[in-house]
Image (cartoon, rainbow, N blue to C red; front, side):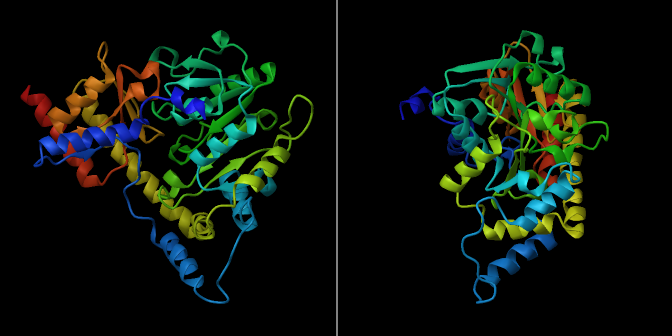
Length: 391
């Protein structure tokens, strides 16, 4: 595939790991704290871990063994997602269970092919643009998001595209779109006959009841939007791999045919379904006990975000995100983001993520994540205070 040559030399996070290894080779005594890669750190809650274990052990018995499952996912899990995540605003047969949001984004790009135009927030999760480049998409429109526009694109200056990628709570900025903003987005898509691919991977961090957790809370969205969700940050399933995509029955192509029908055909062809073990865990997540456990997990990471945010603001920084979102976005005007990354590594022995890895609009920023053990978060806060005050 010649399009792979269009990508940068390496994906963002392997580059961060490489620099980390180089630093440790030169400073073997260093004790690094990672606030960079957005990977969960706390154990999977007990009732959910037990369900994973029980199902796994059951595979070693005649009664408990299961082979191939439905490509679209276990019906009981699809029902629970429709009920517990969407309060029955979507139907179970509109929910497609997968091995994670990132994987589904790649399959969606296969679904729509390369003879399309797309609009992408800038900064944004790299898979939106890089996955499209691999497909051979030529027309990729950037939608710059800065503090000056409340990290919501100026839709009046965005040309019409076939697809619009939008993520809220946003990775990397931590910005959360209001209901009014999402209404503008849906009306924009309606007027332009565009399809929104709405990434809601961090929706469980939204604590403000006035802020939508799903694009389907907006009237008319089911006619213009696909929503991608994930158990990764919801339940610590980053390594277990489980997610879902909602494609409503109302979503049609220009010729009136069903987008969902094509998605059903595509997934049946190139995907054999999410792990049965992971799906057993997903069912436990959405049981009453599991929901209580993951709520505690969410609150833990939000408290981490509060500690980091208050520490940085106390040192005079303006910090975006970190409220209703697990990411914090820190600006250093006039500086290169990889230089800022290196400063944090050298000065504080803290690993961050350079904003330029998410797009041109991220060049003066670094992203910090609230995913970490509490002792590491507190130690990072102490280092920031000490070394900043020393200078």
